[in-house]
Amino acid sequence: MLDRPSELPEHLREAGAGRRIIMHGMHSVVDWLSFAVWEDGLLIRSLSLSPDGGIRENIGKPYDFELPYWAGEHPVEPVPGWPNQAPYPLPFHPLALGEQALRALFGFVVEGHPESDDIDAEAVHLHGFRVTDPSGEEQAAREAAYAQARRAMSSPRRFRLGPDGAMHEVSLESS
Image (cartoon, rainbow, N blue to C red; front, side, top):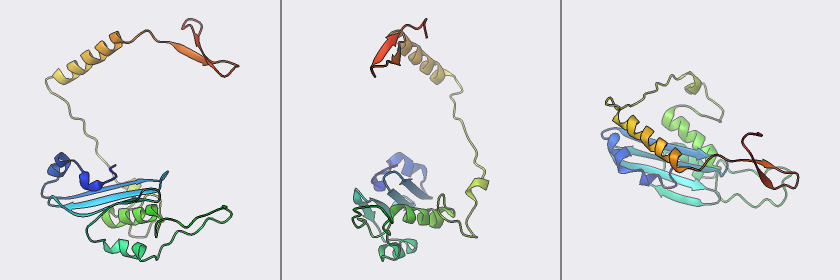
């Protein structure tokens, strides 16, 4: 997840050449939202914001699904009973807009209230792929690097929390 979606690495944009690329990320602990859309390699829209960081990126014309949020139609209501509540620093909650972005860009929501025409994300079958080196050289090199790292490490040590709150080393035979 990128704080500035416009900085999506070039190799990823090149992988989507001739296609639409959509990046979407949300983090509920910090109320952060980020999304961006590229068409044929051209950045059309990018938005990244959180209440603590403010608007980190706002590139391109807002999509129709965003307009009610920017117009103040979805204000963050104070939580009853919470003392010393300052006004929310954004005109809307980023995660609420993030759910609308999921619906508009992908056709489903994760935590919001599903609508009748939303895709049931749980019913979408995903395929997994494993890319391997048919020669086996990459795996052999990886295993050699692991073996070298294990040789460079000291013997394992084990610790227990003592009654005084300090960590005390114990022998591996007694544990």
